[in-house]
Length: 147
Image (tube, rainbow, N blue to C red):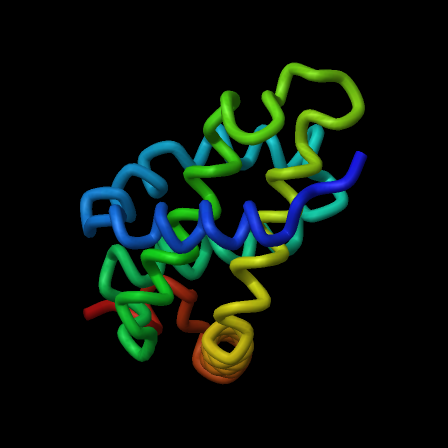
């Protein structure tokens, strides 16, 4: 089964125009459902979906502010698309139900590639700082970034 890339792109653009800040909060609230999909039917794209989810969560709670709002909305759109069981190809169709979901995630990641890379660098540097503080001073991750 092949996905019409142009139809998927049109759907993404139309959906992005309708996204609001409340949709970012919806993604964060429904993150448990995303984790279930990451460990199940979307295991092949689990790392990409996890990265988008972490990015949206850090943006939503104000931890990561160096990302344009449009990027957060695009990531949230992709994640809400994954959570929607009735999209271009309903998720309950065995074998092909998640093909459009994986395609949408790939399309969105491709369109916000630079911001995803910047976020990944920020996250790695943050982890390195926390590790250094823990090893040097015995300060835990939560205390290191409190405030």
